[in-house]
Length: 281
Image 1 (tube, one colour):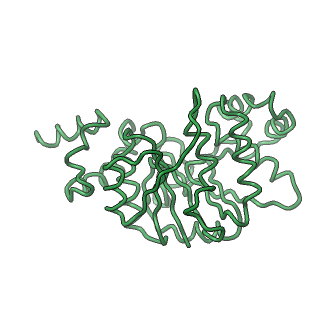
Image 2: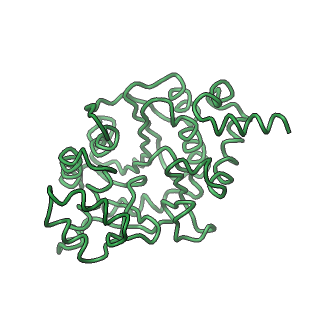
């Protein structure tokens, strides 16, 4: 079973979830869509219905900070996933530009993570994030900084629970241990990747950033992008990203998928502003 998993908390990201699921439905290459949400709202349920997906509740521990980041590393435990399912775990602030079947082929072989632009662990930004873990895992941090390893982004991760359970258990354990660190699940996976690259039997694959392309930092050529990732609100605050994202949102809005015309203005003032401008034009 080729499953695409989205994790949603609250309503702040529902316009992005709508675009993600509708663009995925358009490109194909999967068997089912699953949305996990600790308290699914009627809007999230309508979005799931609009893409032919399944929505289910999920429990996770509330912490003083980074609760959702830590929770991401434990979603694989949910009973909806069979040990043989190939799962793409993807953030809701994405847009699918190409069929995802080739990425599932990679997941069928190994646990799969995605490169972020041309960044690596010796760059200023990633180095600073990695150093936050030095007191917890000094050996892994030293190895990460000694040699330039690919910097990854966990907006797109692929796994199979039956095969990868020990790696997923470690991802979850590291994220819990480092819950105070920023980008918790991402840096936990980064450290696991460093360890994997230093080992003899490598079990993780890094695919290029065409599968997780930032409108600002991407290395892939625009014509080659398979999945856009509008991290940091770049679906509306970046001109290039906004143009790509808005085209799909506008179609969903015109078709009133998931009754989006009733709620689109409520969760993002930039969407509200653009809809008002469009109506006045």
